[in-house]
Image (tube, rainbow, N blue to C red; front, side, top):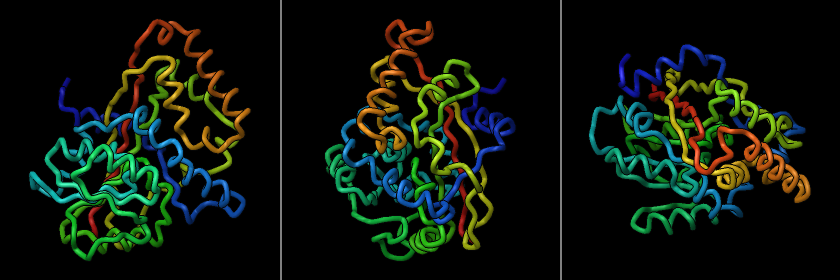
Length: 278
């Protein structure tokens, strides 16, 4: 068996073709307020987000940037948050500019990367000139974008031959205890907003390619509970439901052999999709 991470990612693809993503403009009317609250929920928890959210596998970042064929591309981390994806982009040799709408997340980014540019802006209004970057990378955020407005903006700032790539870290639910963790972790709003219907597409971009990469994160019961506590579906519920939910997660993790005794590895899968402008 090959130990090439990109090949390993492609092997996973054949088993997970059901994945789809919804854009902001596809949410139903009754979802709109809740979606807005979920999208804006992270800033108040920026420190916890920065501490507990996982990074991204370098093999996935290299695959995303592969069409460029250059060692030091200029990259926009769009919806950069606290810089989780920026860390990987820097590690593979990219030069990074960040755009992030939330003041709290942007402040955390600036603390982590004082030498990098972090601009206030959104995917629908990117504060960069035309043809200014080789790649636009989006970590855990494309589903929050209004794609009808965002895709033209992304195409505008990309140079000819550039690439758009989006990343999602997801729990490896083919592992039994992880699948049960996802069930235990559901909140009252987990299924009230739709984040899994429709692979992104736009006339300005070629058809998206996708690949999956095995990933993981070293956790304890407490740190994994805290990680899930940074997910939007746990941030927008009432304080009482949040307390009950996090308590339920802790109780579950303390009660199974895979996670009860100190540190353990949380199995993840990282989905990466990429497309070039037409």
